[in-house]
Image (tube, rainbow, N blue to C red):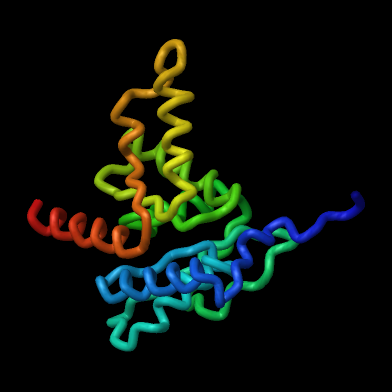
Length: 191
C-alpha cells in the first residue's frame, strides 16, 4: 500500500445520514437551552453540531466554536463555525475543550473521539473536573463502558474503583441526552 489515504474518512458522515441529522438537532436543542456548541470544527458530525446552532433563530449570542489541531491532511474549518481556534497539539486542544465546556456530550466517533472521551473520563476520575457530565450518546458506547468494567474492575486485582465505571452516562439518543442536561442544569440552580 503506497501513500496515505484519507485518514479521517469516518469523520465525514454525509448530511443525509440519520446520525448527522440527530447530532444537528441535538445541538440546536442545546443552543435553545443556552449552551454554546464546541466541536473540533471539522466535517461530518462536528459540522452537524456547529450547524445546529444556526437552526435556532433567537440565539442570544450563543456561539458555534471549533477547536482544531493543525494537521497536514485536515480540511478547513466547517462553514458553521463562528469562532475558530487552532492548536499545534491534541493535548492543548483537549485542554481548551476542558476549559470551554460545562458538559461533554459524545456522539459516535472514531479513534480521536475515543481518545478525548477517555481523557475526559480520567480527568473526572481524579477530580480535576467535577460536576461535569460526560454523556455518551448511541449504541457504540455501552460496549466501551462494559469493557472498562470487565477489563479494569474485574481484573485479578481491580485497577479502578467501582464508582469510576459510573462516571460516563450512556444514553440511547439525543432526547435522553437533552433530558439529562436539563436535570443537570436544574440541579445546578438548586445547589
